[in-house]
Length: 141
Image (cartoon, rainbow, N blue to C red; front, top):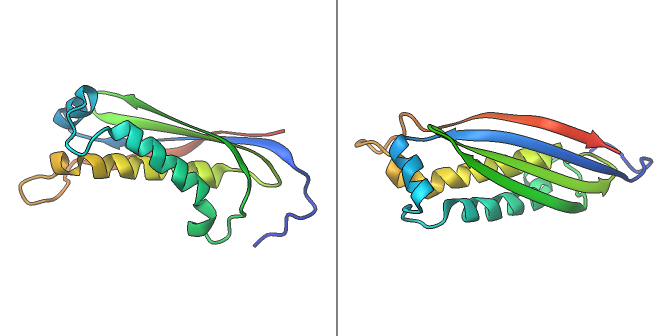
C-alpha cells in the first residue's frame, strides 16, 4: 500500500458514470414499476452506497477513507439505463475507486433485478451488457 501519512486532508470528489443495455420491454417494466423483484432504482441506489463504503474490502490496495457524501442518480434511455455515482471525502487520497465500485455495483444490481426479463429461451443474455464505465470528473481541493 502506498504511504499517504505525509499528505494533508483535502476535499475530494469523483463522479463516475456507466450504463446497462436492456431490451425495450425491460426498459418499459422499469419505467412503469412492473419489475417482479421490486423497485429497481431504490435497490440499486442502496447497493451502490454499500459498495462505496466497502471498496477497501474488495480492492486490496485501496485506503480506508472517510466518505462524507454519496449521490446516486439514474436515467432511463431508449435502450439503456445510465447510472452516475458521485463520492465526496475530506481525506488524503481520492475517491475515484469508490465511485467506480459504486457505479459498477449499481449496474450489476439493475441486472440482477431484471435478469428474468432479459434471459432468452436458453437462459442466456444475448443483448444485455454493462458498458462505458468511466470517470467523468475528479476534483481535489
